[in-house]
Image: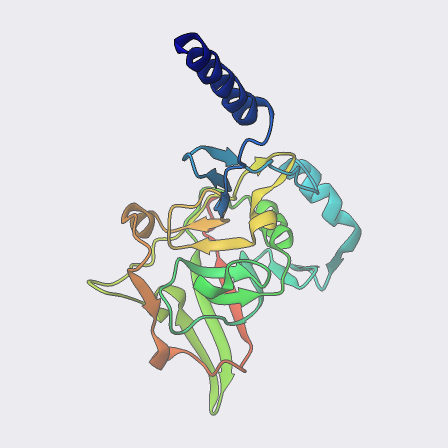
Length: 244
């Protein structure tokens, strides 16, 4: 009797092991999260990083733009919808108000980027803005960034930092043109649509060192009383110093 019970127990254990390891083992439920998936066990599996399309270096970026750069005059060039004035050392392009209610992480993004957390968005190609900056040798400089638009009685011209409020204190005007990075075979700023960041974002063309150092995403908001109506097109103007 004892032998029989022992034999039945051994068979039951063997069948249970087969069912778990080789048969109908239950599949762990997975939950999608940023950057990958998390199984019920807590294991994180990252998504494969797709190779970015487009130029893989600043030189390739400039060469790719040569076919559609147009001369508008002695000192002006048109690169897509971006205008470059070599004498004034300015880059300008159209934009519009994107987010007025929620906290901001960006001052400016491409219209395919994170518009839900950016004050302005633009249809201008990010790489065209960067090509213009490369032609001015602007990397590492601190540009003056202004936003202009037509209004009754003339033209409004407001420094970008004055259109952004903070919970405490105020934002200064110290922007830094760092020019993004080339990773995974492409230009990160173009892939993510990031132009001017209020957080520490190496992919953005322009960062704000003091804002990024705060390491918070609920600090900045739109100064709605100073903004134009959402239907009004604005022009973003970046002016670089004469010293490259």
